[in-house]
Amino acid sequence: MHSPRSPPGTIVATFRTTSHNEAMTLLSASDPTAPSSNITLNLSGGALQFSVRDRGAALINVMTRTRYDDGLRHTVAVTVDASGTRLHAGGRTVFETSWHSFFGHASGPA
Image (cartoon, rainbow, N blue to C red; front, side):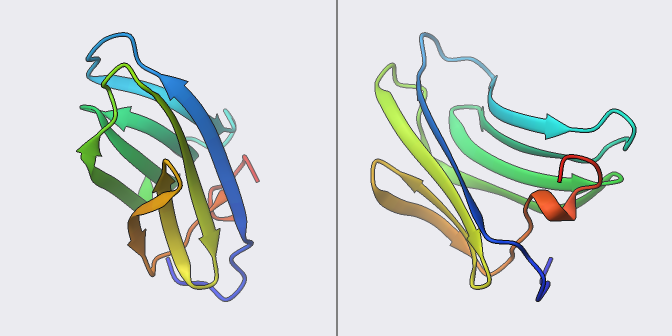
């Protein structure tokens, strides 16, 4: 979602996997009074995924090609600002898009 009022921010998570799970949540924020509205950072099939949904509509849903379920320690960051969304792993950008949605776009967890 392109929005001039998109508040900037960064999510940082450090993790190490112990198996090849189909899914692993790193961060999930929602409000139970706002159905299907959430912000998540997770591993899906080993790939890093970031998504924001508002009332069931996916505002952003991006995924890396690289797998991170290798048993090594990883520090990842999602940075959202007026220029877009960037996913970083190990200090380097692994995905970027001009789309920018963050906590203020999902009903509830803002």
